[in-house]
Structures are given as C-alpha cells and as structure tokens.
Image (cartoon, rainbow, N blue to C red):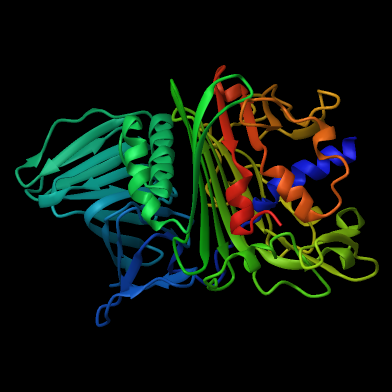
Length: 518
C-alpha cells in the first residue's frame, strides 16, 4: 500500500518538479553590475541605443545604462560586492557610476529596495528627483511617486539623506522620511524589517497573480488576469475540514521561456493562494504539453527543454512560504558518483506505461542553488561553486543566503539562537491513515521548530480517497480518467505560523488538460 500511495501522490505532483538550485555571480565582474532576475516586461537601454527587452539572464549593466519595468514587472540587480537592488513595477532606473570606490544610481519613478554590503572604503548613492541617499552598509527602500515625491524607509544601519536645498539628515533604523520639491519632512516611525519583508513578499505574490488590490478585491483582479490565461478552471467544493472552497486555477505564459501556474482558494473567512513560475532553457512552443512532458527527465539523452530555475509562493495573506531555485542543468543521474539517485523506472507518455530504464542513462534537472523562505526569512537552502553532478555535492547554507549571497542575520533568516546559524533539518514521511490517501511530511529542526505538510486526495464533497479507489489502474490513461473525480489538498502548518495554516486545494483537471500530469 505504501508504494501505491507514493506513486499516486507523485503523479499528482508531477507538475511541480521542485528540486533545487542556485546561480553564481561571475568571478570576473569585479566592477560590474548584473541584471540577474526579471519578470514581466523589463527593458534596458544604453546611452545611444533603443530600448531592448531583456531576453537572457544574467545581463551585464554598464555605466549610463537604464532599466525600466512595466506593470506587474520587476528586476533584481546585483553588484560585485554582493550589494543588491530590487526594482518594483513601473519603475525607471539608471546606473550612473560603478567602481570599487563608488556606486551611484538614479530612480526617477517607482520603487527601489537596496541591500548594501558594509564597506568603509566604498560609497553607495541613490538619487531621486528630490533626494540623495548616501550609504555605506544598510537596507532601505525608496519609493518615487509622480512629481518626484520620495519616501525613504530605513530597515538597517544608518542612512544619510539630502534634499535639493542642501539640507541633510541622518536616518536611523525603522525611520521613514518623505522628501518633495519643498524639501524634507520630519522622520517618522517606519514598518519593522519583518513587516517590510512580509509586505514585499505579499506584494510580489500579488504581482505574480495580478492581485495588486486589497484582499476583498482579489476575485475582480483575477477575472481581469484570466484574459491572459491559456488554461483556466474553476469550481466550488468541500475541503478536508468540511469548509466550502471556491477554487480558481490558471496557466499563463509571462514570457517566451516561462510558464506560470496559479491557484486561488477563497473560503468564507480567508484567502489562500499559490503560484509556480518555471523558467526554461529556451523559448517555449505554442503547445506546452510536449514541453511539460519532459519535466520529469528523459532516457538516453538530455531533454530538449529543461528548467533553468523556478519560483513558488504559498500564502494565507498573513504567512508566506517561498522557494527559489537557480542554475538548473541536466545530469545523467544513472551515471554519476551518487548511486542513491539512480532511476530504474520511467513513465513513458508515448506508450502510456512505466518502462524499465535498465542500463541506459537517465537525465534529470539538478539546481546549483536553492532557498526556502518562511515569512520572508530563509529557513534552509544550499548552493554550489559549480554545476553539480549530484545533490551530494551541494553545500548547505550556513552563514550566507544561497540566492543573494547576503550575510545571514536574524532579520533575513531563521537562525538557531544557540548556534547563530540555520538549524539542521530532518524529514520524516508517513501515511497516518491506513487505507486512505493521506501522506504527512514532517520537517523537524534542531532548534525545535517544524513544518508539517499533510497531503490528501479527496472528492468534491471532502471525502478522502481510499487506496482502493485507484487499485487496478495500470495505464496512465486509466489513472488520469479516475483522477478527474478527485482533488489534491495540502494543509501546511509551521512553528512560525503561530497556530495558523496555509490550506490549498488543486483540481487535477487543469493539470491534465495542459499536459502537466502525464
């Protein structure tokens, strides 16, 4: 029974081949800036060039180069010293100077969040139409509205601000300052670092699903977003706790080499949502099913299409979980040094059955770096200095963020108070209800914290499926036909949620019709 349960749950989750991996900053970029992430419409322009849409990452940025982002878009720029700038939607940015001694940039409109590494010999400047921010090592957010009105929130460190009249002021942590053409105002209390991180994550989640309104306006926003969806499904059902759920699902194409799967769950008193954004090695064809069929891997030769990175987000609008993976590349796992990752059987969609791999090679996508975040803070992750050939080569994160390279502190990571480092994690998988399709994954950490994932297959009335509901189904076609009568639900609890949970229901129909379940 245990093998059957594992196989059923694996097939439902095939659409989210969530292994892990990171990206590395080029070693020869000593005095360069790199555009390392872009979603939505992001364009760059040199001093004597036309605007060009960003198509390949990472992309170097030179002095005098400009970046602009469209609606629901954003970009991340990383510098050689690991300082980092994040641009929000509808932003206009210019890199004015970059060297080992001084980095200067300008934001004319929109939102910029900067995390600057502390260096006593280097100067970091952010200019707006009405203010200049002088930094040596700090985290802060700048928002520029129409007319140049500037709001500065300081999260960490000290920040000097100067207005157009030459007046200067030193901001301290958790202070906010507003500056306009008349000059600077009086500092006031700003949101805490944790609140800002949480707000940033929720804002990013809303951008991903087109939810830039308040909670009560979510469905109206989703109705507008549905016009962009290639696949869409929706229905009402009962969840495992007996609550009525309005479920909406979409599959979209944010850019030529990406697909995005979005799930919205609305109950009477809450909203839960999920997204999965996959980035591939090249532009995707109009028909996605053939591409998505290659996600689990391929026999004998590497797939034509594979993930180079992915991002997931889950939230109940209070708590959030986020995954980021970079550096995806195919590896023949049957012929590497790790015997524990070998693949013996593979589901061949063409013949609609499992086939034995035998002595042939099997190529799967491995990721060089990966980060898992709860409420905006790193929980665990790994990185690597090169393309890994097996996950036994990965280096678990300890004092640096595996994605950004930033030093881990209590503000950006869940550190063990005794060791000051990320707590060691262990995972236990059980099937607590004999005869029913219910899997529990329990992650425990040495600092006493935990994450629990309860996975169910259930029908529209909330009845958890019995193993006998799927017995005797040999072919993939028969399995998919039976699966149309059921839904998948995951209930996530964590010590960081303070008794709350993230509760997500997915209907397999959209996954089957799009080719995500083979």
